[in-house]
Image (cartoon, rainbow, N blue to C red; front, side):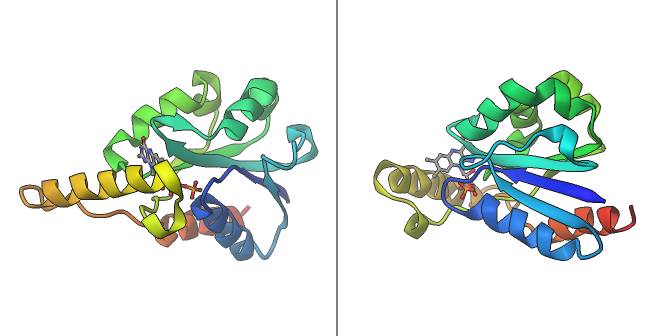
Length: 167
Ligand SMILES: Cc1cc2nc3c(=O)[nH]c(=O)nc-3n(C[C@H](O)[C@H](O)[C@H](O)COP(=O)(O)O)c2cc1C
């Protein structure tokens, strides 16, 4: 199968997730597309995995632009959606804000790939925001044992790879 993995990434986490998935799909022909650099045509592929990171409650600009141009075409190709973000309980909300009803409803799955909060990967104002989010998680961890500093979730990526390898 000819699979497109299309992603946008600002500080590299989503890129790492997309590359991890690509490496696992050894029995398919995989095209890895950074949406900041290229605009793949959905109709050229048999299957599409599409996603990006959330910042300040919004998806990466390159992903949003791609969706404006190709939403209808994407709905026609079998696909899985994913997001990288650091507030897991907002995942469903971010999905709704990012992808159209049609695209979500026609998706085989929509997955949370985790997200990193590493200040050393950020610059300027972004570094400050990451420190603030980390601090607020650390504070809530005192009362809520489910509050943990997030990371990338390779097991979620492997789960998708296992499913796609069977196609
Ligand atoms: C400036 C900034 C704002 C962020 N805002 C949010 C947010 O609103 N919600 C959330 O869940 N995660 C937020 N995050 C966490 C990112 O989604 C996470 O760092 C992700 O791994 C970034 O992916 P990337 O490295 O591919 O850009 C933010 C991160 C940064 C640096």
